[in-house]
Length: 143
Image (cartoon, rainbow, N blue to C red; front, side, top):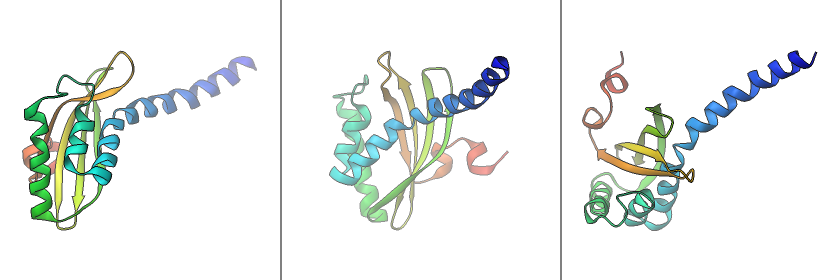
């Protein structure tokens, strides 16, 4: 009986733990989006690069200007959607998401890295208004 209970517990907990791990990589995106909604483009970029090798990089911070240009073109920020999370390794995941504006989408791709402390940081990110310029072909065009 103990073996049956243990097997049931493992069948329930292992997929849940696997989902939680995969979902954890999106935490870096969520933190930056929350900062974006409250404090604008610069706050988002600062949040996304905090704790990574990009922190303090003028080139990375200049990405805030791209987000501001998108706002000028597409209007106000409305929300976001996580499209896909691909696990490259235990500590490296690729997170693909869309930032929604009033008049159109901005496609984004983040390379998320889990530090030894367990914090997820963005070690590379790209934004573009054209899906095919950022997203894998299989996501844009199907298989």
